[in-house]
Amino acid sequence: MSVDLNWSELSFGYIKTPYRYVSNFKNGSWDKGELTSDDKITLSECAGVLQYSQSVFEGLKAYTTADGKIVTFRPDLNAERMENSAKRLEMPPFPAERFLKAVDEVVSANREYVPPYGSGATLYIRPFMFGSSEVIGVKPAKDYQFRMFATPVGPYFKGGIKPIVIRVSDFDRAAPRGTGHIKAGLNYAMSLHAIVDAHNQGFDENLYLDPATRTYVEETGGANFLFITKDKKVVTPLSDSILPSITRRSLCYVAEKYLGLKVEHRKVKLEELADFAECGLCGTAAVISPVGIINDHGKEIRFPSGMEKMGEVTKELYDTLTGIQMGRIPAPEGWIREIK
Image (tube, rainbow, N blue to C red):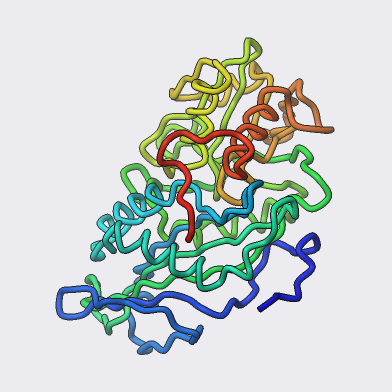
């Protein structure tokens, strides 16, 4: 079977693929799960996910490497993070080994939709879980459904990577000791108004500060920050409310072990941003989105790396990590999982 898609013209959007994975949790245990061609979900109007937003999700990609293999990148960390997210929302964790098996099955069953090497496109994989049984009082659901689908997506930046302009937001992303450190749908729902407002004001993204003191940098609505000092040190903000980005974690390893750079995980004050040479947002979708300007209520912080292209160190990090993902650069042990 061949798929009639113009890989180079794909947007970062949804295209239905033939198969997805489904498993149900009932009477205290997960069933064996299966691949299905049915993309529709039937729920009670009183389902826990609809009444009290009991849902968590993940995002990862499958790639065609330079030598023609189909691989995924560190899916074990997605499995681990989803377990932690589920526990925080009183949901039964989906076992990590079954998560990995589901990834393998979904990618293999939809392998014709894995874009070819060099196209700039990838197969995006979306695992998610939600409360499926009826809940009217405020309490966890009894039954749950775990699902995973895949869709081919184009590069996050069409026409090349250009630095973006973001603003310091007046909204808070997460409450102190709240759910900012897990990948729950409710976190993203509350960020929608802030991102729409930012776009209406001419900005690409929001920079959220810590809600307790509003003096420290946390993250954006969907990505972690990564800063480069003028002496080429990599700095990432430290906070209990930040989602632990797998991309950020990987970039920090690459910085130390591949590029020989020093890495600091520490609290970053808003007032010190003007001292950095480069700034980027890191996440699964774009790997790194370079930032050229941060607007703090009319005061512009302009990074020396400018608005024309990625900064020197950011580009090295981007090229090295994507080289590992695409098989051009040898990967650390355990980072790449081949789909047979």
